[in-house]
Length: 258
Image (tube, rainbow, N blue to C red; front, side):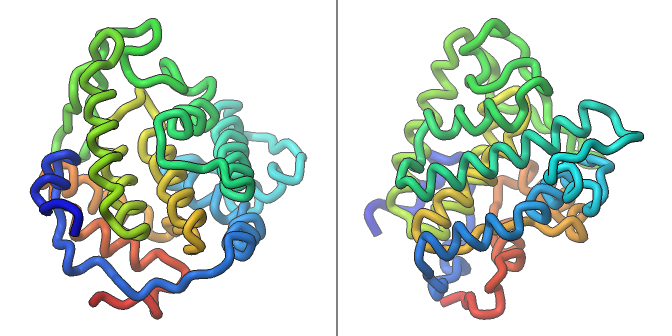
């Protein structure tokens, strides 16, 4: 282990039981894992849209991705689905061309696609654009609200936290690094919106660039996902969420804890 657990946990501002992270992970070629995501793109996009409360059905998502517009829906809901599809395609292009890396430029580029036209600002950390003081809360339902680090002009704190967090994650094996980054991005709320969506894309970029299949949270598990995420925001303990993400992996039955 490159540095102690506490250094990692302090940098991310949350912790987890590292002994529960699976160590037996099936690896494939990058071509194979990219092909799988490409084939399941409508399902991947629909799953992500359901987590956002988007009313599009799976057949409607498939039709929309085939280039046929759907009547009876808000334009904003349609744009959200199209943005999810475009961001997933951009991620695939990055991984296939060996351009993906766990970095701020990749993170911000993907956010700029995910919430384009939907958020207060997109593609920049909170405080790096025109809005430099508004700090949005995260609603946790019956558990109340979670308030992230404040928005400051130029985002000095968010940039420092991101740099330190990414540096600390480099000591982790790819699966742990990927899932922990998703939770890191969701917790710190680097953007005004789309933090979970963008951070899941980066998680999958880390996985696929190491030959590990992407993870999609099934639409049927949306409530479970939201409940576990709310508990994570309150407890800062990621053990439950990492186990949940393992259960969502397409090869979950062959991924075993040590």
